[in-house]
Each structure stands twice: as C-alpha cells, then as structure tokens.
Length: 480
Image (tube, rainbow, N blue to C red; front, top):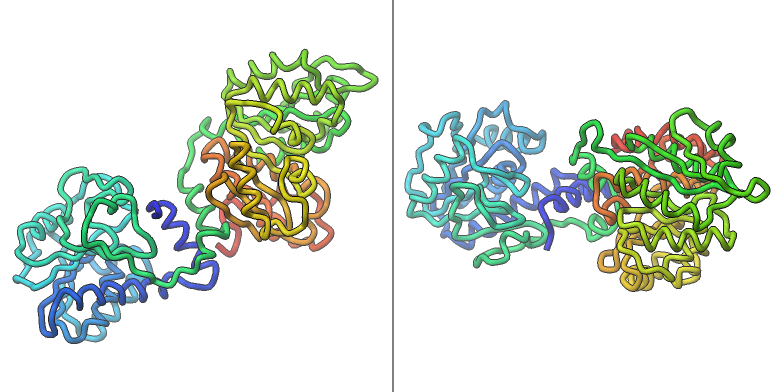
C-alpha cells in the first residue's frame, strides 16, 4: 500500500532511474485500456472524461490502445491549459490522428451520449478538497448515467489516502490504480492494481522525488525551527560545522552550547550562529551533569531540534551528562559522534535520529563491517530494538525506522574527509523541523551527497565548502 504523497515521490525517483514519466504514462494508458476492454465488447462506445493533468494524460494514452472501441474523449479544459508536457503530447497525438475529441470549457457543454463505458480521468491521487466546476457537475452527470464507470487511479473527488469525499465524488463501479493499492481504496471492490513498470529501486533508493515531496511542504518565516547543537570541548570544528550546515539547510537559528573555554574558537568560525557558553574547567573543558538542567530547559522551552554529540569527547562526566540529557529531553534530536554509544543505555521519550558511521554502528550493537546494504536487515532490527531511526553512514547510506529500509547512494569519494558527518547531522536537524524523523533521515544524506556532487571537488573536498552548495542541493541542484 502506498500513500498519494509517497507515490508522487516514487514517480520522480523512477524518472531519475531512467524510466521517464512519459514511459510510465504509456504503461498507465495501456493498463486503463486493458480494463476498458475487459468491461466492453468490440464496437462498444467508450467516453473518456479527462482533466488537465497526468490523470487525463493516462486517458489520452489509453485511447490509442482502443482502436476497436468507439471512443470519445472529453477534455474538461482548453488544450492550452493542459498542465504537463507529456499529457499535452498525448492530447496532440489524439488530435493528429483525428480521434473524436471534444473540449468542454463549461459544464453546460458536457453531453454524455449513452456510452457503454465511462472512463473517469478527471483528477488523480494528488487532489484534495471538494470538486470544482466543471468537474463537480460532470461528476454528477456520470453518477446519473446508466453506463459502467471505470475510474483511473482513484474516483475523482475521493481522497486517495482516506477514502473520504468532501462533497460529490464519482461513484465508480471499477477502479484501475497504478503500482500499488492506495489506502483510500482498501474497502472498495473491483479495484485492479496495475504494474506499470516502476522499478522497485524507485521506492528503496532515496532520490529527487523524496526531496521534492519534502520541499513541497513549504514553510513560512519562523516555521523552520531552531537548531541547538550541544557539542564542543576537546574539539571545536565539529559543532561549528553542524550549526553552519543547519543554517544552510534552512534552520531559522542555530545555537551552540559549549564549555566557556572553547567559546572563542567556536564563535570565531561564523557570525551566523549564536554560541552559548557554560562554565567548565579551564584546563579540561567538557560537558558535565551540572549543565544538563539548563540545557534541557532551554531546548524544551524553545522547541529546539537538538544535535547532541559533535566534538563532545568521552570524558566520564560528559558521558553521564549526555545520558542525563537524553533521559530528560522530550523533543527531537540528532545524536552523533561520541553520544551515540550511550543511547542503548537510556530510556527516553525523545524522538531520535542516530547517525553512526560503521564503527559507531558496531558500538550501538549493530553489525560490524563495511557492507551496510548487506546488513540492512540487521540495522533495521537494531532500529526496532532501540525505537529510533538509524541513518548508518557508508559508501551507500542505510536509513531505517525498524520497519522500512531505504538506501542513499549519492555523494563523491571526497566525502571521506573529516567533517562531512557533522554537516549531515546539521542538515538532518534542520529537516527535522519540517518532516518526520524517518523522512528527514532519508532526505538529509541525499542533500549532503548532492551538495558534494555539485561542488565537483573530487578528492579535494573540504567539509566547510558543503555549506555553500547545500541550498542548491535542497532546491534540486541541476539534474533533478
């Protein structure tokens, strides 16, 4: 089963894998024609009622496979308003072949001439809310018709994810849906799921479709959240890289909480983030349990997305403080670096994304080896046991919430340089402000890897450079 939003991502991912949408539309059209043939006899009349989008394009393509039926295609719009190039191309093909096409600019122009079958291709799975005109009046006309009605992907007016209708909806006798069953169709009879040639990898490999779906959520000023990096002590660059990357990935504000003794170097990396020092021994600056109550209060009060771990080190006081923070914090956090090994020891109400490299994954209790893809089931079992999302970093990243496993294979060999994991943690935190943990964990390595690809530095990549190309990668780069 697949949601309408996920289906849109899979379509785009398939195109990125070399199966363009025009090919998928051809397969969809053939699937519609197969069902139309099964429901009619040669010579029967078939009225195809199409909208301006790709749902209508599926119907246009279907007509070319129905030469032995008497087809009439009703377009509920002016041809120039067809919204996609591939749907327009299939409309143009019908007109060039002198097929019976009729333009319905107004619902009063719609005339259904007692066909044997009506194909409802007005609106697809991505449409929400009540039908507008002319679709609303045409839907009523289809419901009043004595003809059998076949809906393409989902009956127009029906929410593909809930099965509910906000007003009038087409009362289809049959539905042909593509690739996988939609949740809103589970209680219906006479639903055919058609395989249209989408490769399985389009669902399992993170691609531009996943990024596009996250981007389409949109945001307003103030919606993109505050990122609160708790790091630094023995190392100063890591928390600065995480904070800077979070800003490049869209966070509204980035704060770094660090020992006072390392305030100057961390603050000196950038004027763009806010460094909040806490008292710590000057000779060995580190996080300790005394600092935790204020950190938790700050993070909870501002609904911060926390990044815990970059540059913290492994002083015993620091380990105790990190455990205490995880036990008391109830929001969303990315756990990275030295804080990772502590997660199995703590019960927490927080939603965590864990970002281990291969050695850190083994410390968490996961598989020990270079082949993350081959160990994906074991990583999923660990995520299920811990109750958190795992983003395991490798040549191919493996992301899992314990139930679903995805892979991300973008990036360059130069990403083995130190610091790219810190930028990944920052990107993940920024995305957690507007996506659920699993979605954020899937898209973050894609953005990080694409940022490296856009720089095209080869083995000369520096982690600080990624901050420049992360915004372009989030926008889709130059090859989405």
